[in-house]
Length: 149
Length: 149
Image (cartoon, rainbow over all chains, first blue to last red):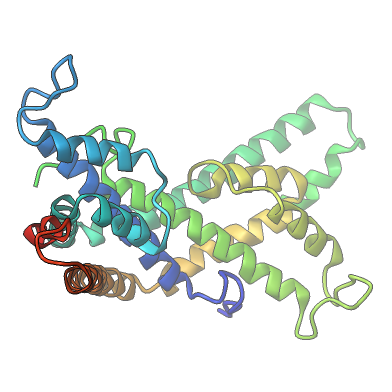
């Protein structure tokens, strides 16, 4: 299959996917650390957390800005300037998460669901076409969609 | 590692990734078919293509609208109502592309680049901290960033 090289801004689909996945890892790391900082009880009504309030507040504030840059790197770099220890913690978590992420599961789900989605779309279209034929008198505009099907 | 279940709108990171990958497959299929429709010589200056002008025009028009819906399904469903044969062709291509997509390469790149990015960010931060220490007199505000490093 010929994949045009300009289709994704000159990137291969695999490269594009890798960048997207890195962004996901960075985001997951941020949510994992946020949950750790909130502690078992979560933030108190006054917004205080049991553990490290400054890290918690810095992370919440950072999560308000979109994760720009390849794989969230620019976002992480900005966080590093704001709170060095927190950024280090996020980097540790996203690296550790690499071992946990189930690639095989993603591949299986994406492939199976693409096939299922194709089947579903074709079935919906066939039903619509059938209904149109049943509802309209013969020789009307429904004939074209029957030809296509 | 505890992944908070509400972090991605209730989806697991793997599920979120699978949906994103399905969207990528749909987009790649659209670009593959577009290249096929343009033919070896590409569109002529008048916008005509050698092969199937209607499919070409319908696809170009559809590509102007964002690929909404899970994995581009909604977009494909709209295309199906506009040009049934074209949508079928895209579905065939995205299903065939499943066999070509190199998951192992994506996993390798995403993992390696996450590690490389961590190293790069830490090095940049260490350099900035070192420069700040060298440029400022002792006992100034630079001490905090040294503590963090």
